[in-house]
Amino acid sequence: MHQDRLRQLARSSGLAAGIRWARRLRRDAQAVVARNLAAIEAASAYRWAEKNCRPLTHFAESLEPTLWLETERFAMDLENRHAAEFEHLRRTIRLGGGADYRLLYFLTRLTRPEVVVETGVAAGWSSAAILRALQVNGSGRLWSSELVYSRPTIHADYRPFVGMVVDEDLKDRWTLLLEGDRVNLPRIVTDCGPIDLFHFDSDKSFAGREFAFDVIRSRLAENAIVMFDDITDNLHFRRLARRPGSPWVVTGPRASVGVIWEGIHARVVHESAESVKPRGRRPTPRTQPR
Ligand SMILES: C[S@@+](CC[C@H](N)C(=O)[O-])C[C@H]1O[C@@H](n2cnc3c(N)ncnc32)[C@H](O)[C@@H]1O
Image (cartoon, rainbow, N blue to C red; front, side, top):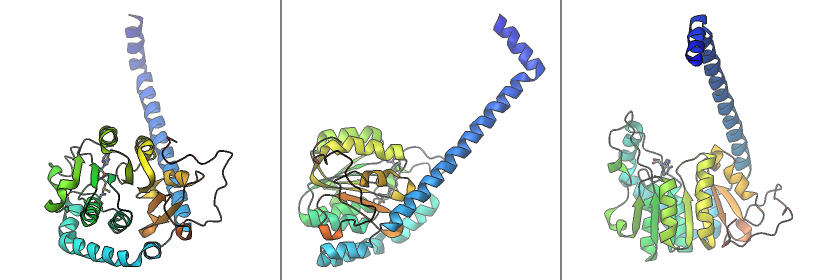
């Protein structure tokens, strides 16, 4: 009764409208602050990544020059067959852009992983690279996590385009789940066995990256490779790289790819002046949760 009376009074005196206005103002101000903080973080991540970036060709050729030539041939073939159609879909239905599929093909061929897990499929450039390399290797399986959500303003049915650049003859090595990382990844790690290569290219927020890494890290095989795409979006990869005992490299176009891999040879490991001293804790073995 009292409350109804108070509401009536607030309405007639204009107080309610004032409160709504103040709340809206606070929400807008919070959004502006959040956007600015994100922009500052991205700028800082970009400066760090650029300073530490190793050109992809140097990185790959220092590991295995002949394999890099094979990689270039693979990439050229893939692009010749699909680039035009993809470009059209990228513009019309805003299909997500391709990851660094050269590096993925190269590392998959080089290290011959048995279990590969990736997040973010879109047209499937990364999936096609990993799957082709697994096929050439003659063994291994890829588990992919994608989120097919309705995008009415973009396209009524996005599903047919997921993995469109992946050839049919590669699909018997592929398990593709479409319910998003938060549902897919816990399922994948239960089924897939120790992960030799993990590639992240889905929800690029700090929380999205952290969630995925938290799920997979205790399931990584000895000497596993962990790759993050678009590392200049925020400081997530820099934080990972700064953990003691994790050899890492930043490479790719616009310093966009971060790789953590205990198998990187000393000569290609990051040699930054910034190199971080262990802070009291001994490096944790790769197979232990961190
Ligand atoms: C940049 S695209 C991936 C490109 C792909 N790796 C390639 O090389 O073609 C990012 C994809 O992540 C997907 N995605 C976004 N949030 C996701 C989530 N929470 N879980 C799984 N996939 C997600 C998007 O639908 C989009 O298709």
